[in-house]
Amino acid sequence: MILYVFAAYLEFLNPMLHWVISVDKKLFILINGVLTNSFFDSIFPVWREAQTWYPLYLFLLVFTIINFGKKAGWLLFYFVLTIAICDQLSSGIIKDWVARPRPCSTPDLAGHVRLLLNRCPGSGSFTSSHATNHFGMAVFIIHTFKSFLQKWKYALYLWAASICYAQVYVGVHYPLDVIGGALLGSLIGYGTSAFYVSRFGTPGRENLMPVEKGM
Image 1: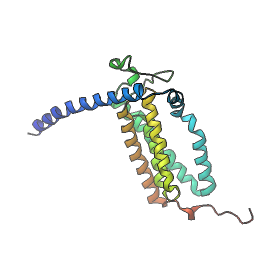
Image 2: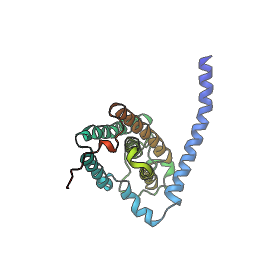
Image 3: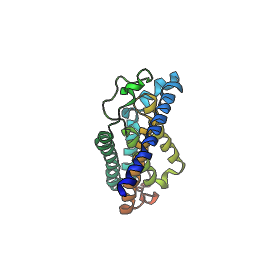
Image 4: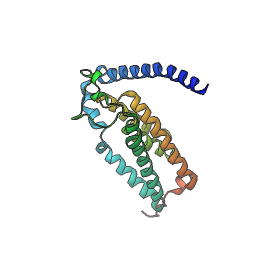
């Protein structure tokens, strides 16, 4: 009886999966090949690069050290831990397990992909590590520093989402890859933030380093 139900479930799931993949490819062609312009062509290949955001990461590092002093150590540890978990799960486990070819290396999309990078990455397509890592960072920061960010949290969501969009636009990921990566990164970022807060509490203005008078 159990095997019969499982077989029936697979028969139902298989056409659904084909439909989802078909829609995913159509959305990719729309973003990568139709909704394009010269400005996006020049900005998105750079926008998705980690080096572009080094100033932001440096600002976060300096902000944390200056404002939290000795307490900054654990904050930075959990932040780096979030990135490490995101990257290892996405790049080291899920990509190899799913083994989905990138759109820029998929035969049935030949002639339909605008590859705006110098190469097509050889790793798997699902999940997008860029999406996983950046949503992991964004969600960790948002939930850990919620007393500071207020409406700025939407800017972080937009930042992570724009990098996801750039991955599809330049031709190296399908929309489903970045959606899956965003969900995975969000779960990891929320989990590491919740674990940090359960141990150390939510950083508030009372945790800031005191400013000496006369400075």
